Image 1 (cartoon, helix red, strand yellow):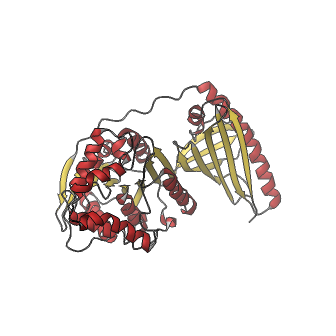
Image 2 (cartoon, helix red, strand yellow):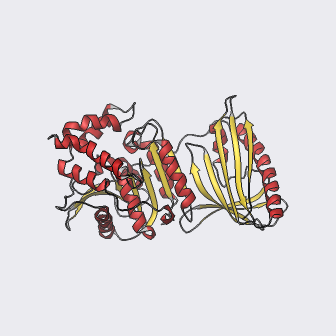
Image 3 (cartoon, helix red, strand yellow):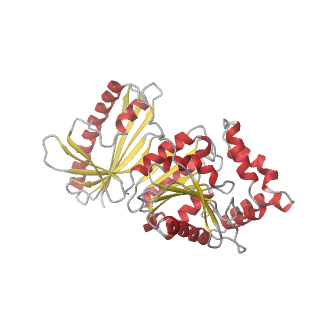
Length: 431
């Protein structure tokens, strides 16, 4: 299939923040060619813009496939309107310019069976991009400083319950609400209480619950070694107990790996997938790397120590450089509370992955976040995984965000920043 690329780069005296405030409005009418514009949503809640242009009756439709406010990038794909095109994927990126102001890049990859038609589409695209960058710059200068961040809603009430079928599972839940169930899964050194700030916020949108994984907090550890299939079965038990509709899984680190493992097995059950500080876990590591990871973390256990003994050292790895004493105390308490048997069980499960993930199975909207100072799942790594999901998913709808001034447990260190992104994601999912 003949393919070509279009790239237009322009400069603007407006700040990157001001330029992004305009460009980031996917359904905004800032481009001079736009005559009419309306917002649509598909069956997953993915954003689509339907528009006409000056002097034409043709209806164009484009779907947002990628967004990152922290990177100031968005991507979209053509659905309808351009005659003779097989594929049209575009991307806008805004960065700070060394000379001051902003550098705006607008690019597209175009495929069409007829080379002459391909050339005509690319020529028209270049003109559209050039006019768009000029209009964007002017609109950003007029708009000035971006508005304040959205205010957070008052947290809803929380209740602790148990699922008493063996093994017992402990949950913190919000009041019943129509729509999907949002289920939070903590990391290997955490517990369900680490999600309290997110539960209180998410409960305004849909029913939410945080689960203690097997052996953590109020949940029982089965005598047999836990497997990822056991965790997936536990998620299904929670779903059945709280009302068996669609799920939104929100994971942190180990919990992200479990959430992605569930998505591999039950993609049709998920309305959305939120992965923080991880995704692939040990699923793409070689045997030697997995063994080294497990052995290094079991050394203190084999020497007779408990997680409470080496918790301070773990917190130094998890916390960002500016983490408050209160945050460090919360992370320390979570780590100190883990029984040695539970920690061994989780390490063994994590380092014996049953599969390599196939991102082509992820047809639901995906949100990925990680801390600016995360030593275990860096922004470069998680942004790269998000890009792979964008490339491999049959219906990509991917958002990536860096949570600034936070370490690995970014939801605990920066709960308001985390919650703003999370609520944006949850609010647009079908209910």
